[in-house]
Length: 334
Image (cartoon, rainbow, N blue to C red; front, side):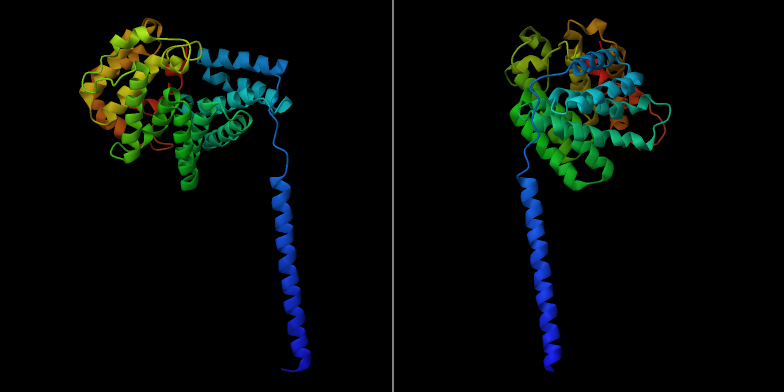
């Protein structure tokens, strides 16, 4: 090779090495710049607008006014933008997005863009967890929306992240997040390992709330109703101001899951446990539960059927609770 050619090759090699070095240097600078950026601080105070947004949030949720979610979300988002360090405001925005997505069967026609609520809910719960990492409820909701978003976009990485986030949330507050995780996974096929795990999570919730292993063949939960409390980690086992019919909603879902698993006899007993609630007579969805008791056997196939997005509307009586128009309201509507 002539000397001039060897010099040209050498120059090209030198330029390539220099370019690579520069790229690595810039990449390293970018990494360090991001890694050393200050963390977003949590706000020590809440604004007047945040308090107004909270009041509207609870009023809308407890009244079951699905049609007013947009108005409540506008105020909640404005409050968040005014003070982005407010973890509770972020969480409430996430919850409104979850509700709009979960009960979209209320809409006369479901738009494809309803799926964007999963993305927004995940964003707001990520913010809430980042700002208040010790709040296990935020962690559980984040895991739940990650599962939903993963399913929508067929993204296995998101799905796995959601699953393990849920398991971490269970460790943090099992009485609350065993239900959250199990409910979120109730969509899985009845014969899948995930669905079976989800159903066991519901049994484990009952065991924790009862303080002992509940009889799997004859689950008479009436004997445990005197344990109801409004304080401590077990407060989430019972009805509260936040979830006025939490207990009734829990057994509605668990009964549905048992029906889906083909265990009709036990499902009827779990459903019937709702009647032990002192507020059962005021529960707006008791007729739905009573219908499920009567039709449990025929609902085995209905609850196992795949839900087809954009398919024909199916009445709540023939849908698993998580797919109904009371997916949130069964627990939260006054």
